[in-house]
Image 1 (cartoon, rainbow over the protein chains, first blue to last red):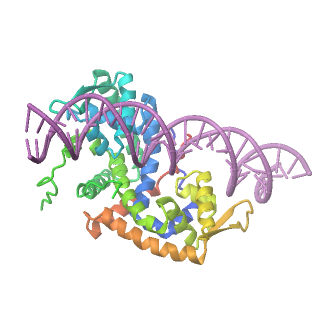
Image 2: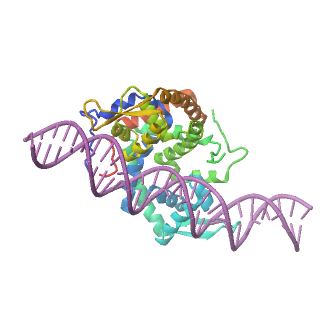
Image 3: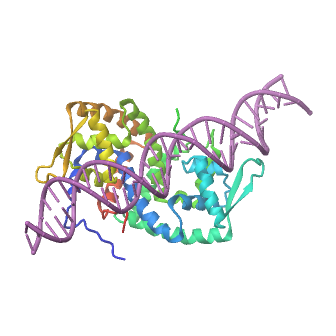
Length: 164
Length: 164
DNA sequence: AGTAAATCGTTGACATTTTCAATCATCCAT
DNA sequence: ATGGATGATTGAAAATGTCAACGATTTACT
């Protein structure tokens, strides 16, 4: 695997745009790093027939938190109907199962099968590699700082919904 | 100094999922904050009939950097054909114009009209407010840190394209 | 207990966004 | 000059996002 770091000599002609005012925008920087990371993530996960979406659902199902579909939807900022499709797919592959909620039988608790958990562990390792690659320019300490800042920014989030 | 936000009163039932391993993933945190920020951004920009996408294009057009469409596409991590549509729209509204490239007449340099620049300045103010809201939990110093880390992570980026 | 309102998952329709191949015009190297 | 690259554009196909409606439950109220 050759990591083609071209930045040395070439000085991409696009770099000039970094002088634009929008480069100072946190949302823009966030979007860009997220986009770059997604590519690497999806590339790594493709080996397991997963995408970021299904991977994150599988991650929640593998935890012992007994998440319901609705909780997943909210946590992942997805529409509940999207969760349905993702779980249908994972269930068809025998990676997760739906069980009725204990106190609320409308709800469905999604949990990973043994296979699902095993696949997740492998995928997780690949995802961690991808993350390392995406953040290669940062030291371990800086990665920690970055995560802390992101978490802190998110924590106070007053549950932003799209409407209203 | 422990800033124990949140858990006191509401304690959303979804918060339990934060214990999932995926919460430690930088890509996931990035995605989540980006999603939350986008909602606020788009909400703020709607007042000017702009979305994040058209806003960022307008931002580049307003700069004196004379970006071509291809440069915009690469800089914004968008497909060139998407840029076409965005600029068609902005041009129809009289906010930007296309001019043939100086050395390369295939290329088209996009620049804002006076109206476009004026609209951008207003929209920019609104976007800054939205950003402040999205990052309200961070101090000014922390916002600066966050931006620095994001920029640093992006700088070394070896121009990741989707296909190999 | 009985009823009305709210919630969960699901489905299906529709809009928006992404992705990609094909095309024309222009540029660049030989 | 000719052939191979590159920039913009178009259009089609696939993937995603959004939303309203529905049956099955739960919850709140009387």
